[in-house]
Image (tube, rainbow, N blue to C red; front, side, top):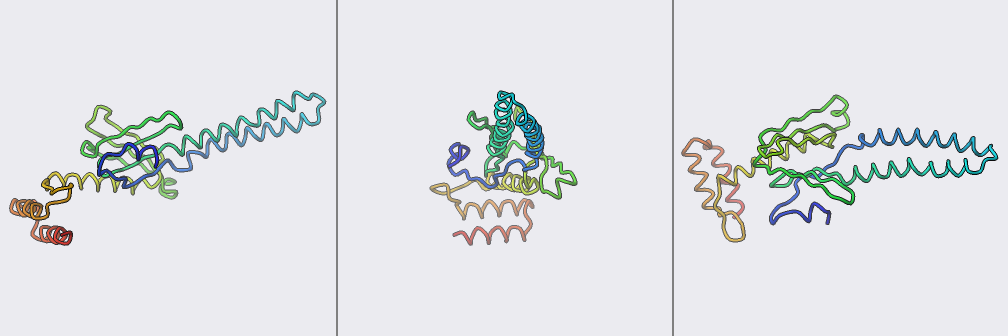
Length: 208
């Protein structure tokens, strides 16, 4: 069980879990490869030199870019973006964890920004505007941003439906007759069309 799973509430479930695209590691990989190349040249020069300590220094320096890339990889791997049926969660940190979450009911708007390259490689940025004190959640370069946004809005809509249909039986299971009665009220108030009412009614009856 992952760290985030230990923070889940009763009856809360993960709908989507993703992380930043591997492209965010490209810069780290390129810089550290160039560093390794420079050290390799230094080591080659040192091998032709009688100065032993120079070769030892090159060996020590060789470890630095490898360690740096491993650190960047672990930070990338441990940063997760999650949508549950109740909230959006952003978790990061290898040893010291930092978790930021926003309730779906407080989400006011979602802005998706995807470049041409992002559309090809399927990554992008999502800005979540909320009614909380934080105000904004910025999720940068996440994988499959369209799916993430869609599922988040679907879960928010599902919460709104639950608020309208409120009554539930023992164990948190839906009270089907009460829900149908609520739907009928919405139909009478012209919130639902006859076709929508019949469709929802059939769905609820199928669960009995």
